[in-house]
Length: 352
Image (cartoon, rainbow, N blue to C red):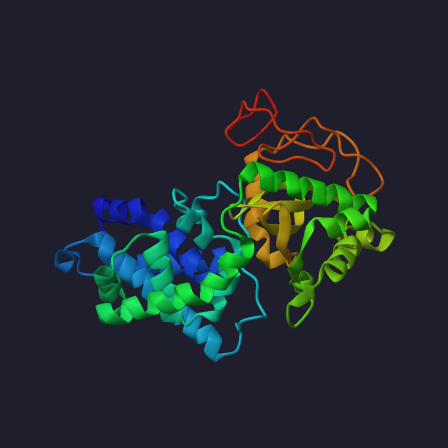
């Protein structure tokens, strides 16, 4: 394979990875799918390929669909037993985020919900909403009729409509962040009444149980969710021994939504993403299984290895110091970020 052919693939690698992540909900699986696409590109007769981007998109999409169908057939992946892999905002695998539809399609709320769709419905939804393909183009990619593509899109939108109404649509990022900051302060201070007040009446919380449970753990009603959160955020000697040290909590953004990142030393040990609507928390998604946090952990370390909290551990009876923050994050005792950095960092020498 000559350098021009390799360059053609590399030029589209990021888009293919973003497509694969939206279809599979796993960064590791997405990387494997992109690599499989490259191997097929390497073996293809390039003289017969008129539009490389279209060819690569079709191959990558169908590789992902084969993986979804295979996992479902082996009962490795069923709706209600699996959470997507969280990615730190700024990760190129999150892909385009210019429109509300593009941002929504990569949120943990939607990535979790689309597990209920058939593989074809999921593919049509992603190609249409996130990448703006026409139904004619989607029909060619999936080898279905244009009418079938339209029908799949209608079914997907209908199934997602209830969740959209429940969350109240797009929340202002700054307002949503303030809600999560209040939530973190309430969760780590024992103010259960304030915690309950920040939750909607139909709030839900979903956790992977750190990968130890066979199915997802689900909690409903503000009181049960508040009890789950208080137990999860409470620091104990047993938790510190299990985690390898005291935990520091940061407010950051994951998959376009506000989130709390739990860090021990420089290692991410958990992430809780929030769906916020009308000034309250609508849903929480807790991921602590180590294999689901690998890419987020890598991005966290790489983003700014020199940013460390100066003192204190949130949830361990102390206040997290304000200096030394990572761009886009705050501790449990944070003030509003200053406006110098596009990622919300208050550090004047931010590398972003």
